[in-house]
Image 1 (cartoon, one colour):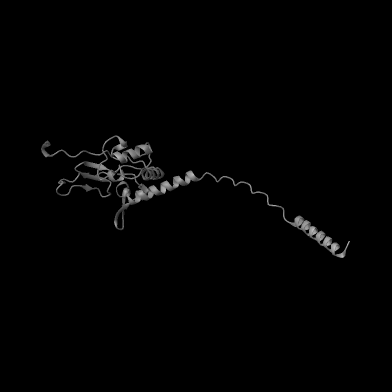
Image 2 (cartoon, rainbow, N blue to C red; image 1 turned 90 degrees about the vertical axis):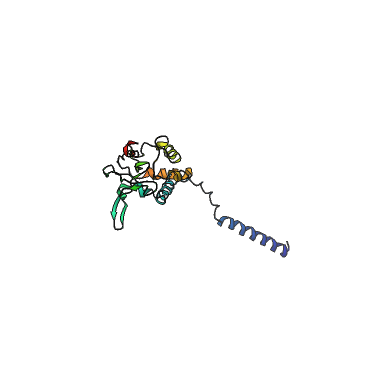
Length: 209
């Protein structure tokens, strides 16, 4: 065998050895990663929490506390009492007779100091207890009843009229999603036992005519 041919053989053998050594030294292929475990089912609670926060926002900017939350006296006058949040006109609050002389051409309405009782041509109305108390609030209501009441302007969706100053005509324009969010928020607040009085009809005209 010529020296040239022998040299080629030696080179070939060396290349083969290098390749073999490299193959042995190379790290083994990484094992395929195990499939990721499904994430814990947190979507529903997160969605519920989001609805409550949306409802809180709508109740706040809708000024529901102005009438439905009893007041306490603060530095600037009456302010909502957070310990009685949305519990309606206090059953313990006794009011004097409604002021006389209200008329559509003058002073048409008047309110109590806490803005929870109102008098006008419709009679006397008391703001409702919106907390989820089972006996005196909305604890026995359903989401469907609440939405029906807001859409129809009827108590429980089929009863007496919702009286001023309740702006059900505007509230009833909310989307189903927003009304459901308001309902979710109302279900999340503490229940407060407070039996709001029934509304009173308008006073009969003087002389009974």
